[in-house]
Every structure is written in structure tokens, then in C-alpha cells.
Length: 354
Ligand code: AMP
Image (cartoon, rainbow, N blue to C red; front, side):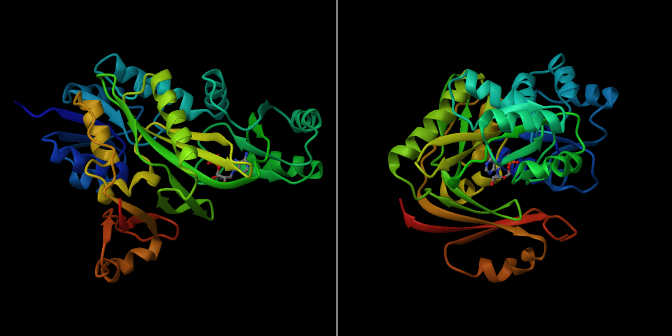
């Protein structure tokens, strides 16, 4: 059987770890990205360096692969729509469009009966003021509707006197206004669905952020088991409703009174799922490559509990000391420059046997 070639839009660490998982399955990967010597390009079988708007390069890429996926959600949706006319693309452009725009995302969640915090669009400081008045809220969070990540493009409005400042900070024509969630903690679920209709998810992890960047994921999240099951049910329901093919990360708030609210979705392997490489027989990356290539999903069971810590910037220089510790698995993304805050690698420490 000739190896299928998976086309991967994006050349970062998520593409790298997907390509590595693909190798284990006998798949080849062709990475399409914009950088030289990027983490994904370093390990891919084939690569193209071109802009996401370059139709000629996209056409050539599509001709050389069997199926196409992506590893980050800021790929222009028009690029994915164009590629869909040439080859199957998973997850679909409809899923990508929902995940790229926060108002569409939260509206879709509510349509599917999945809970979110209260939200409303606003096109001016006056709109924000009106929303706060309607909600009888003294504070709110405003966010740009697109291209927000790691806490960028959002402002906390602690009283109505701060609306103008927050609006000016975001430099946007439209923002989403959200009710401030008094959350107990943040968790995430990595869900996958294949082309045969199988759906499954990994045990939810507890996520702790530092300076708005994921710091650690602890699995299982230390919450009542029924709540973890409910979070998995939410993620799996969503996967079915949107006809997901591939892997998707669902980030949720757990409120003080133990309610679950979906905050964000990402239709790709997720940073909070990196622990699955070392604590599960089948990682999130393997599930993703299985699903998009047409294979059936593997097991979601974990053989150990896990604590994953991101290695940011110069943290990567501790790589060898960490690797010398028992039950400790280090992954280095092969990035040349250890800039502050840059995700350079991660370390997973396995806990008790599950
Ligand atoms: P996001 O870009 O939506 O993932 O938000 C980044 C972080 O800001 C989240 O991980 C939360 O810690 C915080 N945050 C976002 N939205 C809200 C909200 N509505 N209420 C309270 N905290 C929030």
C-alpha cells in the first residue's frame, strides 16, 4: 500500500508533532508554511515555503498531497475554501470559520445547546456602555473578534469609566463584550472524530496560565468525576454537531458553583493535549493523523496521570537536567532562537499508574 501524503498548512510545533505521529502510522507529511527551517519543516517529508494567499503555490501543493489539514487556526478561511475545491480538507472550512470569529463561535455553541458566558457584539464605546447597562454589570471583558491568542486583543473593563480606554486599546471596528466569569479553574478537553463516525475524547486537564500563556496542564483535572464526564460530553456533542474530522481542543471555565462554560475552541491539536504523547498509547497527534487520513481512531485511555509544563524561552536550556529526572519526558521543538515567552518545548512528568 503506498503511503498517503498528508498536506499540513502551518509549519509550527503542532505540525511537527503531527508529522512525527504520522510517520509512526506510515504516513508522509508535506508542510506548507511561511518560514525557513521551521519546526514542522525540519521533520516533514516534503515542504513548500509560500504565502497562504499564493494560489499557484497552493494548487501545486494540493496536487502533491492526498488530503489536507492545518495546525493553526489563523490560516485565511479563503485559502481553505480554495483548497477544498481541489482536495478533501479536514476539519472543514465551516469549522474553521466558526473557530476564527468569537461571535460566530459563541453563537454556534449556544445554538447547539452548549453553555457559554453571556456575550454581545459592540461597534462603539456607546454600545459597550449599553450592554453593561442591560446586564446591570459593573465590569466586563472586551475582546477583538478575530486573531486573539494568548490573551492578546482583550481588555478588562473594571468600571464604565474604563470603556473608552479599553475600546482604544483594541483598535477594532467590532468587539465582543463578555460577562466576567468568576471561575474556579480552567480546563480543556481534546476531542477527535474520524471519517467512520467514531468520536472520543481524552480525560480533561486543568490548565494554569502565566502572563496569559499556558503554563501547566494537570491530568486528570482535580474535579468531581461527573464534571469531567460532562466536559467530555460537551466536547463530543460539539464534534458531532459540527461534523468534525480531526482533533479539536475545547477550553472551558469551571465556575465557583461548578458549572461548565465553553470559552474557546481550536480545530487542531492543542497545547493542553501535549501530555498525551507520553501518557497515552495514542497521542492527540496520532488521533488527528488517523482521522484526517481515513483511519479509525485509536484508544483514548491514559496509562498514567500527567503534569505537562511548557518550556518558554530560556526554560529550554534546562532540557538535559529535566530529562535526567525519573518519569520525565522532554520534547524540544527545534526552534533556533529562545525568545522570551516563545514556546520552545514542553516537559511531561508521569504520575501514578492509572
Ligand atoms: P481567551 O483569549 O478567550 O482564551 O482568554 C484568555 C484568558 O482570559 C482566559 O484563559 C481567561 O483566563 C481569561 N478570560 C477570558 N474570557 C473571560 C471571561 N469572560 N471571564 C473571565 N476571564 C476570562
